[in-house]
Length: 361
Image 1: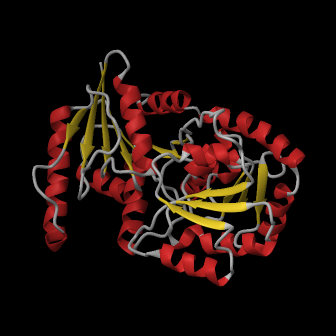
Image 2: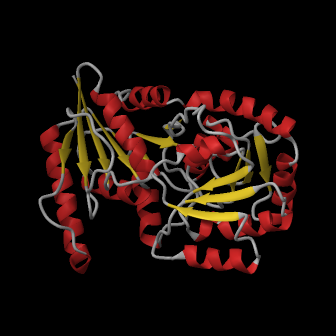
Image 3: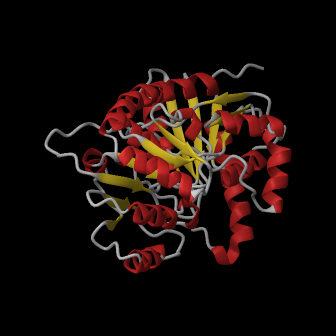
């Protein structure tokens, strides 16, 4: 019997939460495998469907920011007690902040703990979490890097020597023959500063192709209310009839199916799931280079273009090139399917399972 303990803050809507839910369901479907899911964050909600055999554990108290220190220690106590009661063969934790908490809570116990950071791998945390990561990560049984760049950073910082590169499982975007392709440049993502949506709007406005539209799918996040600023920018540029903010959409697939190009101006990512989905939909991609994960899935000049980070002029030229060439788009589209095939959900789950159950004393 493989008894697996998965730890994450919650299963709310998000990239790492989706991956954790997928892993939980895959592991739970295996013979002689028991899966326990510990939700240790503030809200602890579940927004993804779970296999009914997954055993969910939550602290029996409400975490309040007004007593953050006390409730953090209560969470650590809960975590240690639950894991000892579960007596797992292996533990998998997601999220750089939460990984520190998990490793600290379980210090001295015999269970192998595998950790994975899920944001930009060289992201600077506050001084305390930077210090804890440097001290605690070497205690983990292994480190799962989402990209080869993340592995390089892990080894350089001496966080852990047992490092496995496992990309995110990419959700397959199935073709809908009922949806007609349109001259649409699409981008998908939360409206936060690091996505640089203003860059994309400015670039598209400068191209000002009469036959193309820019569609932006994604809602405000982190209490920034960027949609208001972006709408004002669109009006200032006189592009109300060409650029559209669609907000949060439940059915994003119809936008992938309707579009012809995917544009990505983010400057900070762990593994860009939306780029993977765009490639799965056969869309050629234009993106800023230097973002972790992109080089693992976008090959410059083969299935898309990677431009110098934050270089709007270069981004404009590559985007314009794709907009003006149907032949180039079709060539890139075929290569997109091929490149992304290595990131199928079942294959990624198998890699996780093999790695976190490989511990030997």
